[in-house]
Image (cartoon, rainbow, N blue to C red; front, side, top):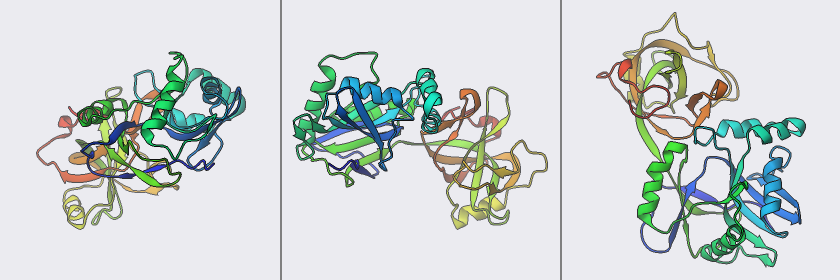
Length: 331
């Protein structure tokens, strides 16, 4: 059977009406887990890459939790000590292998959140309704639940009000949004048959740089003061500015000679290669739209927003002291 996962299309609101099931959109690595024989499981990424070398603990947990012949769809996640989802730890683990992977499995264990069932020992179930597949998955994972196991059943509700609460409340731990699925829907590998609603927030940031020419900036490079050291740290970069926004920014920015940030943006900052930019006096505030996914800095410190930000407007009525610290959304 095909191992390509079913996909979701981004929409702007949760669907109302009967027949919908809602699940958290976990910030992790999408994974198809296949139990080939008793005691042996294989993990595959969305693109079909085998993940066993990087996540041997998760593969072993899947082999323990599921009978041979089972295939499930889920998400590998890492919970940090502060209770938030830690995508940076997943990236570290994904780059590991051999002894290093086994050591990280011990120090940074991950979980597989199972949310769909594609095959049972009796055969393919992708043609059956989601509600039936979910009931079968629950019977597998909840028959003899083990609180210490690393394969867990994902949350699901058929109540719109509950899903709306999840959309707001779970953002605090790094859940990106909600996925809406038809209870009667079949599983179609590779097709976009679900809907996803991302949770966005608006907040303020300090403008510390711009890409493109100073008289026609292309995007803002923004930062936050950190409570750990009181210094201004890179926090994110916006998508391209509109023509009117670029004119407004160009009229108020001032080049900076003394600045705490590097001369170029490192490759990880939304570009494969180092990105040149202009550092400016960090005394202007902008309001941006951001989703909740973050990447961690050194020593587990929350470092920056993982996705590009959207510039909404300048905030000349605010000073840098009015801006929230770290990556908090409210002061």
